[in-house]
Length: 624
Image 1 (cartoon, rainbow, N blue to C red):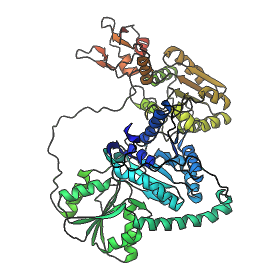
Image 2: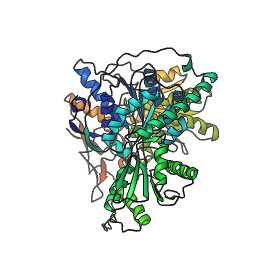
Image 3: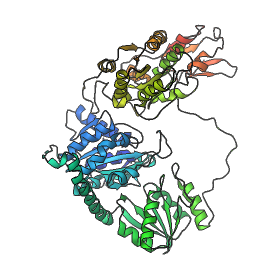
Image 4: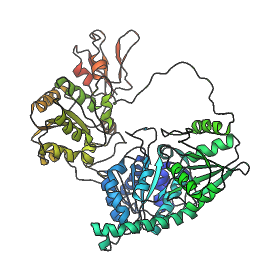
């Protein structure tokens, strides 16, 4: 395993996320916690793989790692370790910080003795998210020092040095990444690995119990810390000015991955500009920024999403009385939407500098390729659950859904998703819809989501006797992010045996009186279970239990078992299109002559198509 080598100077290709893990290892991290979520998942995955590697050899990995039940708990566990003097890292996607924000805001008042990095992975363009919020606002909101890497190697170095900054300030700090940085791969240079501290020491301090009087006393300390952080920012190696071309009064302010596009385009257009690259972007190095503004007559601000640097620089310029012309989002040259890339930056620069844009792409073919939206995998048990629920329900049922693979149930032909806000919202919105309408409600969430934030709304539903059917799709894993363990699995993130929490037992403990546990691959029985749940007056829960088909088939292959392959008997097939038009399995398709066929390479052998075919035209062809 190359990533754990203690060979300073050696270079290796790593993802941005893997580089962050390496940086934490070089800093001697003691505790790593996470809730999996793209684009941050590989940070935790790498810690998990390293831990399993050592434990398999009956060796100590040197750190403790866990996939926590949610981001709030992940932050609390790592925070307690850092308060005890250990070095800790907590990673999550951007919306995860919303879940952890209650802890985060007060944690900033208390601070920590050991270094603690909180990785927030933003997702411009919503590649795998329900919004594209800009978590730089959390740095301003919570008063958190923040680092923004531009490259994987810089992400590794910011992580390594970030622990030192955190300890100097006795405060957790944010490491803000974006999808493009998390998932790009580049050369990383190793530094020497520090040894973990291993055992912390919790020193009792009455100032760590944030009653109102303590909070009033701690808030001024937070502001003092930020002043100290500004001094560090002024001297930080991550804040620098890069000159392109000849000396000029044109300046560009940028941070994160946008810097790469700015530098590339400025060089390609042969511009004469000075680039202020901000790697430690909160708090800003005010003196450095003031001097930069004074040296410029024109400033371009290039930052994805919100105009945070733009607004701060305009305030500084106003306070200085400098009449600098800004080219930014407010001027219409850049958008607050989505990711940037070299084409976007080049288009803006060509207009600002009135030069030809060399990035204009040559005309391509007029042929429009068909879209290929994500879909539930062939054999996914969620499809069978949706199909059964749809057969059981009356008209005009509302389907609140949640974050996970099953969100894909919104697509045709199933169309079993009507409302989605965030992790765990399905049951809460189900209760609200039951109050607000006279419709039947069937909500859907996964087992990982249930443990993450789905239990409280179930309790709420029972206590208030809301007439809803809450479906928990228990496929024994956190599937969408890469098959991570959760409390419903019998192993943890380090590969060790763990206590398995049974979903239906938790529901029973929450007071749910009507609980149906079904195997969705038995579509007839599942349909009847949904009918009984819908007829029950009050809160009912259907637990649909079947492992993710990808994991099930992987385990079969490991055991030497074969997977069934199905085919359609063209003599019996009546072209009713139930398998395509109602069930929607992507392994089934139309042939050239309107025949209906099964793609044997995609078929995962669940056999549900054979069950739903009204003419018995689908049967096992072979085993593979």
